[in-house]
Image (tube, rainbow, N blue to C red):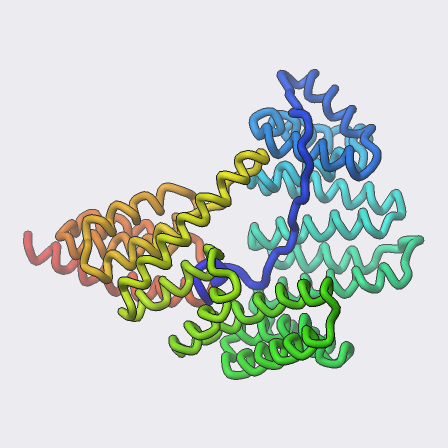
Length: 425
């Protein structure tokens, strides 16, 4: 896949549309319990959003609330309601405290079932599954999905049927991520057939085929989804047309990733050029096209311009997020792209500077980024540093086939570097 989406299967779609709210402050356990009691009493969508906004904005104090809520969930779960457990579960997820998020979201699932609420149960289970997927606990994710599908909820109706389909998608993604490609493909194909080639499910099937490295079939499925979406857009009204445009962009983006996998660089570039023509300021599209070209020693000057624009646009986005109390989006992949472009342009000291900055964040501790940094160390004659970084890269947990293949290459580089080091002694 391309730079940002290659490290995950599918797309997590949770988006917070939040209004400005007051900051929740918690000074100690007693104060935290008081604040949690107030969360228990929240009613109404607007109040919920305001509370969530406050939790996300003041991370330091929300961590105190999360920690206290986790204790309560273990010792006195009856003292937490659906709202408090769900809100604090989302806060923990935002903090990337996945164990806490898992504990609180599991409790919110129980509370939602007690309330016999389809919507609340769906929200809780979907976010719980997302956390488990982020933790790479794919079997547990699949188990939780099955639990949701077994629930006896009084509101089961057409609404539940729609949610059941959405949660089935998550099950298919979990199965594919676990490597159960045949089972995931069977379920995805059933959805495609059941809904007469609906583009969303064609894309899901393509995701599974791609995970199974069946690239030709995946390309066909993405192309079918894209063709159908373009046709449907022509027949849609203005509001539907806007939604279709987003779907078309997503499908084109995924198609570009397949072409990268197939080493069809120009075809990948063509899709990204179309996307940039429509949304010239999109940081992901700018970054991906710049990186793809640079990685294949093509259009290096233009590649550098594209990646620098991606970083500039990402900075603007993060400024707006900061104004709304949200965590900044990570830019490690973009800094890596810039470092790699500079490496290809033989500007090695400059490349080293960008890559050292990239690896400072947790997201920068990625096999590919570390490999790039080690390559720069080597070409600068810094063999000891290169060996150290390659050894670090091999310790990084890797799930994707792409990362595992890169580790094999790193092992070969490391062996060669160590042998050269020994010969000099």
